[in-house]
Image 1 (cartoon, one colour):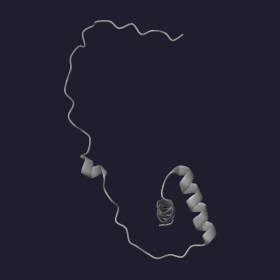
Image 2 (cartoon, rainbow, N blue to C red; image 1 turned 90 degrees about the vertical axis):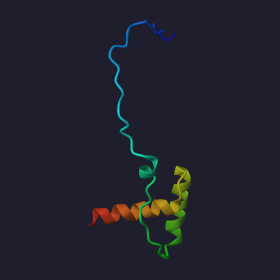
Image 3 (cartoon, one colour; image 1 turned 180 degrees about the horizontal axis):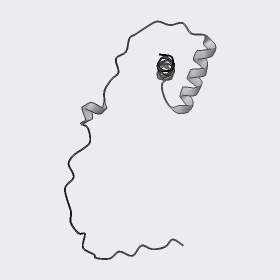
Image 4 (cartoon, one colour; image 1 turned 135 degrees about the vertical axis):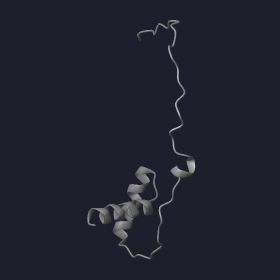
Length: 76
């Protein structure tokens, strides 16, 4: 059986208000600049990304874009 918590009525001591340190919502919802391109990929590659994206509940194009971004950063 779980151990019960015993609450006491002790004073909280000195309390202070903490300034809001979180960024505003518009700063969190930034959109990275993107460029539309037409690209021909092998059916095997597209099928792979579609399968994996379905497993992880994310768009397959986003997975391909992130893979290319990582590659570009790594080899810059």
